[in-house]
Length: 452
Ligand code: PHE
Image (cartoon, rainbow, N blue to C red):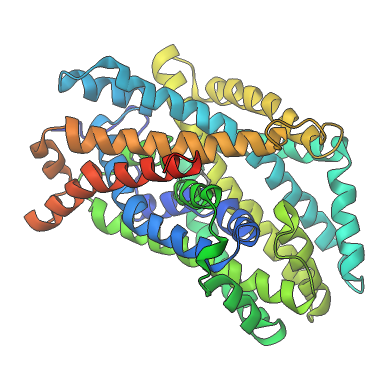
């Protein structure tokens, strides 16, 4: 049997796991990253591969990751170590936890810079700077932001501070309280925006771009990016979901909760695409514009709609909140581990890891301006970190977790955690984790390095 509780506490309310895991999953990945990488990688074909990866790989791996967490009840590093010991497997499984902590650092270091853009846009929105300006001016304003290292640094620092503050408060007073208010608000506002783009944007062109399947546009790299994004958007493969599973009460259904999280996450991503692309096509913008896509399209819509400044403010505040509830989960595995391993208080652990992440973030800050020419394999520092963490470390981490659950853990231990699964469903899930998910992940890697 797994332990009933963890040293860090358990969620005190029934729906917290779903809300916290959804809070982790729904973030910049859905609203900022999904539309821009879909735009860069040819639209519909990319979207289809992404959806397939969510359903066939993401959801089963998420169930595996949560159940590992709930069995181990510790930080991902110690969970992997103690589970490996109890089943007499090699202690090197601890590397899954360690690489997760590292991936979390890498991701948070750039995530915080981008969340900083959203913070800067809250201020712009409040001051009405999108009203009565041309699409071109909006683009110029965004460029100006990117070209100012000190401004980027300021917002990045503020966002890191926000993240560390919640983490330091602990899981129930900090995290749980935050997600209960924010998530419902975010969903409501997405619906309002969707209503706007359906009536005012070029909805048909936007929807066609997202859903028309043109396989010729699918390069090996696009496949890898789609798979990596499935892991990124569901927060899989680095221990965020594992650590949230560690705080999940023993009597809750992992299967139902995970399906709910996967559904909500996908719904928000598709809604974001359906908000952004109609505006792109109505204003003759470039769908492949890259990371700035959301920041140059949406302000145009806000500038034209009645009470646009109000909507713009609320929208960017919510983007910040969505990013916030994700950033917490990026740091939590490291913090939980520092608390367990070094006996640090949550406050010191949060400060220590926060400062490390902030420092690494400086690389991303300058990759948009002074160091934008420093590239390796055609990628800036930001691109490289994102590529390495999202497209390599997360899928490999997820693969290792799937292998551990399906090949290493005794079936009875898995069954204990999934008591509401019929034997057939359990067998299906094990089959996917044992063969399907690993084969797909490896095939995508192989294809993208040109082996297949
Ligand atoms: N899922 C988050 C998003 O879509 C990012 C994230 C990745 C959070 C990995 C935690 C772990 O924005």
